[in-house]
Amino acid sequence: MQFIDRGKIFVKAGDGGNGKSSFRREKFVPKGGPDGGDGGKGGDIVLEVDENVNTLLNFRFNRKFTADSGGAGDVKKQFGRGGEDCVIKVPQGTLVKDAQTGEILADLTQLEQRAIVAKGGRGGRGNAKFKSSSRRAPTFAEFGEPGESRELLLELKLLADVGLVGYPSVGKSSLIAAVSSARPEIADYHFTTLVPVLGVVSLGYEKSFVMADIPGLIEGAAEGVGLGHDFLRHIERTKLILHIVDAAAVDGRNPVDDFKKINVELKRYSEKLSKRPQILVANKIDLPQAAENLPALEKLAAQENIPFFKISAAAHENLDALINFVGNKLEELGKEIEPIVDAVKIFDMDKEDDPVIIERNDAAEFIVRNKNLEKIVAMTNFDNAEGLRRFQFIWRMKNLDALLKARGIKEGMSVHIGGLEFEWHE
Image 1 (cartoon, rainbow, N blue to C red):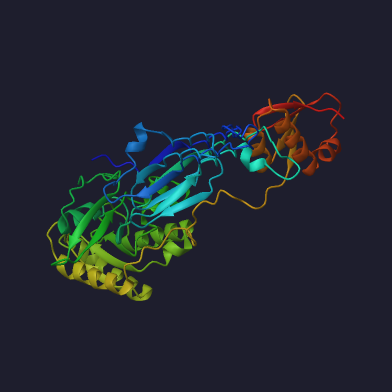
Image 2: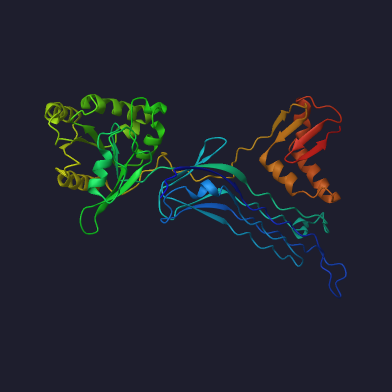
């Protein structure tokens, strides 16, 4: 199976249904009041964690998702039907960001967890809703509110219990192949593992944990050197780090220096990540050169106050002791998954702070930015005289004339709000 850990998608929530403008007309009631119903709400775009989805591969081919729009209101104050939500299945461990701002919208770590990432537009109000003591027979109704749309970045950060770290070719792939049913490619050249490999390690009846063999790390990874961030992103969620070093120093590197350099990279990438519990594992002890480096590695583990194990993944030496120790350590650490962000944030579409911002474009026209105003423009029927007068009242309430004058507007200049252009007159 191909492993895809990033994706970019465009989502568009459903538009609200239009409100209805109508009047009660029945026998013996020749001048009934307004009875136009409201439009239905548009469907939301919802991301949901599904245990049957393991990668973001589907989003390589399917990148646009649209929810249903709401139905229009009808006579006799009948509401339009609500649009169906568009539910997008994602794997556990998916981090959702706004593609434009980079803001984290949701961190999906629990099975069946849901996040609304784009809200459907509310239905337009029918003319029955605008009846008042001073307006007995309103003829206007609102259009439906447009649904939210945005481009999303999806990143999969693995939910392994144990992450294997170490320079390329120290034997991480051999270890995960020896203790689980995972079958990563194994060879004696750098970066054999180009994508994360997950293996389930059994500890007996109904006891197991997930181990991740992740692409090799090299100096400068915190800045993206080598496989850099591709590596570091996936160990953020692990509870325990197995730090594998090549005790035999087959590539001529010093295993003690390797340990220190990698921990420097972990700390530069994330202070929290550098404080994860570690176990130092000296691999390839079946090779005669290993004896020369083992005393220094034992001393290093004592200085760092971390457990130390000597193994040979290829010869299956001391693996049971290591795996049992890891299993017991994980039980101590507990089963809760720690989110990447300190507070898991589900995106809130309704921000209280919504100031009126006036800008100029290249043609020296005026652009008014205000979320509520843009909604009102989209929902107003300007072909209806009463609807137009209502919008003019809102314009005055927002003090737009004074704001535009302060920016230097002159008679006949253009003002853009949302998708419409207005000509300004004193």
